[in-house]
Amino acid sequence: MPPVTLVDVAGIKVGIIGVSTESTPHTTMPANFAGLRISPPAQAIAEWATTLRAQGARVIIATMHIGSSCKDLDHPEDDSSCEKAEELFGVLHDLPKATVDVIVAGHTHAGIAHKLAGIAVIESFASGHAFGRVDVHLDENGKVSRCRSTSRTRSVRATSRQSGRDRGLRARRLRGQAGPSPIPRSRRSPMLRWRALRSDARRSSASC
Image (cartoon, rainbow, N blue to C red; front, side, top):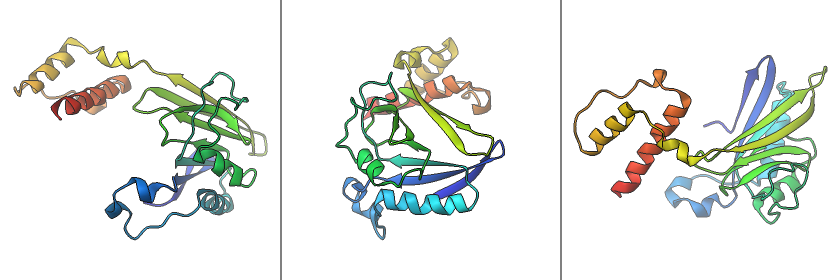
């Protein structure tokens, strides 16, 4: 899997960089890390961002399995509720200014929707419990002029709102009986697909 990619969005080149926590060698099975090494995240991001900018990227996004936690998601300019001892803040401290425009964080399964060190940062908890969004505005010269991070919490109770047909399918599968074929993916709504995934997860948990 390549560490970066360059995509075109409405005529704007967007560079995307993938990053993982420096604790990866200790948090996964040794076999998964055989032959690999971890570079300091900020250093790797800076090097790849330079490469992507040279290839025409106007916006740089770092998607990372590195995160933190902020209790107050209503005041994006105020980081006083954020856990600054977490690895994310170390990366922000070490990144040269204006290296990236957006960070999509992770790993800590917490919430962030803030402007941190001049960067729009989101982390949307885990397991589909929230939706994170960043709006990026470019000026007439194609340079990022401002970004805004937002987060929306999604009610888990929505997963139980299934149609009678869905409930019947699920009941037959749990009893091991044959039933109608599943609804084709192309005909499911996004919410229905999400509900189906959540139902599968519940069944897997129950069978363990």
